[in-house]
Length: 336
Image (cartoon, rainbow, N blue to C red; front, side, top):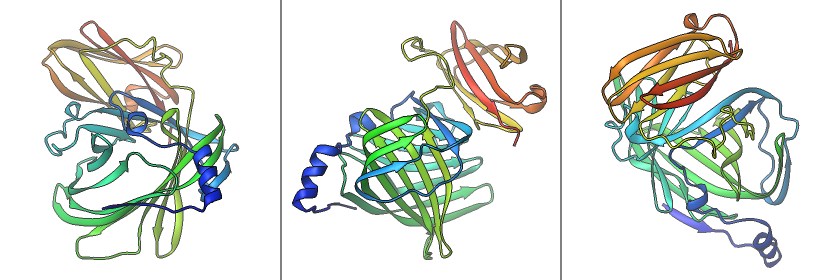
């Protein structure tokens, strides 16, 4: 692995020093118990790299919404499979396992359904401090395992702060942003391919998670954008951070979100408690409920199907109570 600092001409150096910030771990590393909210849109091109750019994505139209969850690895059933990790990021029901320590964030695995990718040599997701012109690269290896197979894998990655400037998205104009480009190529051990995944993420000094994410796939046929999502200031859960109570006994995550036919509720209770799960449609009508008289401390999963909810599309509100503590979550039924 290596970190390379680009050399800039003198004039560009002075522009950079006054117009872009230094990403640091205390302000931009994953934080346990955070939630981050995205609007998913039609796909667009990532735009140009370089200094003092202006990216105008103000006309992006929302197709659906996504909540990213960050939580302690001990609160997932796969903690035993990937013991090196300490933090999980979950999106669309996919769990990404990271070890965040000091100024480096490494990915040790991914869980999708009953398929687990484990890295014995992890790849670096982010290293701090990082600023425009910095490049960090390396290689990784591991295995991908399913119910009936186990395949060695390996690959290479590169992180690059390839641009900075002003970003315009439907939620506002953000100046002094930095764009991080990540290229990851993964393939079966011993083989080679001209393929990989490129992601572009725009970061602000004052917001921990990306303002905009564009993900592209690359193969012999060229580049294709597969996902575009921007930060939403409007949270799906109307409880503000100041109003949100400090919970000691229960934590919960819902995925996929949005969902079509069914969604899962993963919850963790730290002490033996009665548990009640109640689901309301957006009019406030109770449509489903689950009651457990007393559950031992531990990790649990409940699956909610469309048959339990009726025909309504749109928002549903999930109330999860364990003992004297309650969590409120919102999930979207997309109908797709």
